[in-house]
Length: 305
Image 1: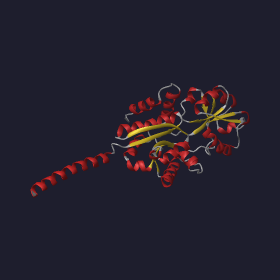
Image 2 (image 1 turned 30 degrees about the vertical axis):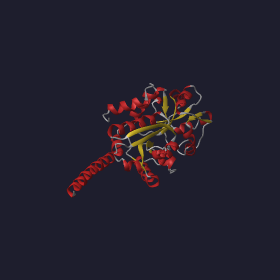
Image 3 (image 1 turned 90 degrees about the vertical axis):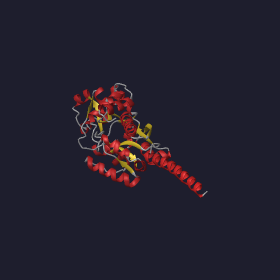
Image 4 (image 1 turned 120 degrees about the horizontal axis):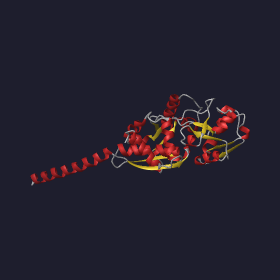
């Protein structure tokens, strides 16, 4: 009888170990994990947001939910702090200059590495948000005018605009009109303001300047439509705008849980040039191609997925 009881015990113990092993290995593989990728509400952010999602899907077992085109910086930043567990997001691509001036409210600096080191340390210390490696392109703000207008008036720099500013209407996004590294800071740095400021959706600025509803617009250096609309990028001769190198920004709790995310996204470190990003943006805005397809094709062509 004792032998029978012992045999039953051994069998039951073995079965329990099998189930225990299966449960443990499932958890260790994180095959049931999910991350939420967000982006701001303009083309470039949509492109890089899809890149983040594609890379994670291709190189990990994690499921990815895409919450793209969320809104401006503050919307994405607050969603990242909440995390997906609280109806937020886990990752989005941010710009170093935006992190320094707009979020941290610190004085603008011009050295790219210094800016990166500051935001990397401060974001982790304050909010447990982790900056991964920058992807290479610098999407700094700039001002642009029609090439013909620039030639007729001898406009090459931001300072050159000062002699005509009180006659010109300036078009920009609502965010640029309000943020310290946008129009308010620009006025202080250059000592002049425009006749009128019209805040509008990013997609409307180019048609507005085409139709002379505005004569100057704020733009990103990587905007694909600058060339298509024959606009001249002016020189920031007082170096007001800080560097805006793009890098994935990840919720620290999520990165601790799924450290493979960092390795995967850092594959794009220093690999995308300003010209690359300008071309990708143009494929969407100028040629009307699907933004997800543009992101996926770029990664495939470069061998990242």
